[in-house]
Length: 235
Ligand code: GLP
Image (cartoon, rainbow, N blue to C red; front, side, top):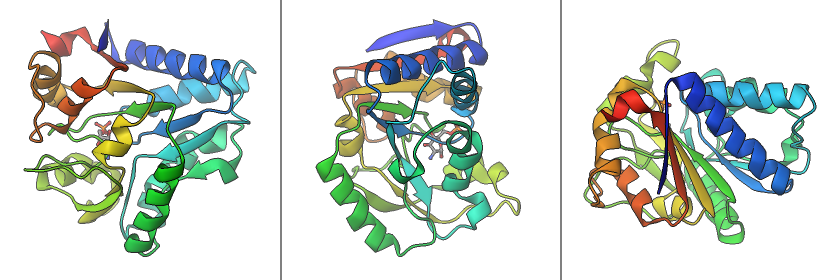
């Protein structure tokens, strides 16, 4: 695992954006795995700026998102987040976007997305991490699912994400890529932002142990992971 320590979140975002832009430059038709939440916001802003400046070209790229809420309002969906933060600001062909549909029958979406991951391998997967170590919405539990599945959200995750919802009411369920889908990506970029991640980050950087109680530790099993985080979170 390669660890890049930075002096600020802005610097983490610049490193993250550089890694993504470099991957797109080398392989314009790549399949990018994308994350939502606070962590990628500045990364996506930098990708939009690169596109506007003509230094990045996403026209041949494909994307797939880690997760989506089940049954939320359209304005609270991760699809809306992605449109506003990235998709509407880059020259990506929108027919090449794969993301669960928040309004569709979740069982049908699981079938559709399992077929997608059966036929496709992510080239570069961008990840954030939840305060409890979740990646995607693979929440800490006694066992973790390998493939795309519907999952219940823990109270701690609901609390952490409530500020995104106008009424504060986070749905009880989400659809997420499984741990196997994430670990099948050719390379993984984990960006860690925020004081609340300190403990789970320590589990990943110092522990040397893989545990379903901190799903991010499964990244220790992958041969090509880059972690970008502020130095202050590691001391
Ligand atoms: C959310 C998302 C994750 C994200 C994580 C961290 O619940 N499902 O994919 O990486 O939690 O979020 P944030 O970046 O807002 O801290």
